[in-house]
Image 1 (cartoon, one colour):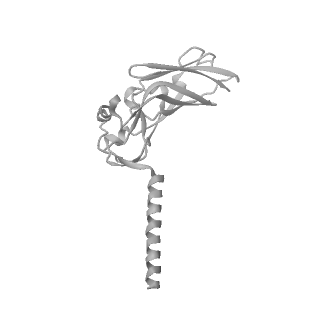
Image 2: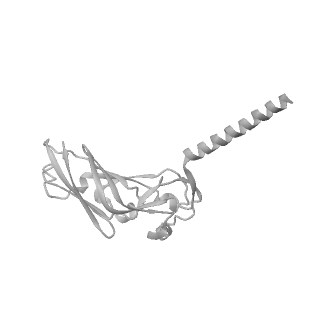
Image 3: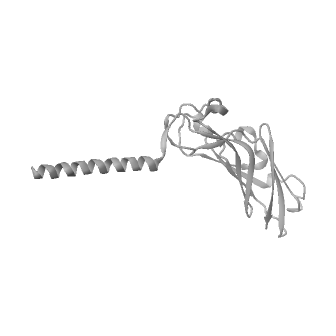
Length: 204
């Protein structure tokens, strides 16, 4: 009888341990069933700029539109992007996108970059725009989990090649100024219905 009690005790202990580990794994995983690959959109009202030498990091900021709250028309946005049949587990906000596309970026500087690129003239041909998107993945029936990397000249940006981009993107200056010093750049990002602007000073 004592042997049977010992076996029962061990069995209950193993079951309890498995249940605890299972709950712990699920909590750490943080994934839940989602009908949408993009479960959060950013309604762009502004952007921040952080410079690291010739690399300029941009972060779009604004109201967040969640899948769980349709007061701001999340489901309408999702349907517009054909993103309604993901039907898999997803960590919340893993694929976050701006609720817009960029139609144009304009960049000017207060000083000459070179003899060809003078102060107060358009410099977007000098920059490479880098971002991530899952637009083609969604249109191809969710055929991948890895976001597509965009890398195009900033003067080639248009509405069709910046759809469903992540809120974080970059602008890389491909030609540094001939003379060292502080240069102030004026960035203007044109979206579908608004234009956002920001200035940043970079030391070269």
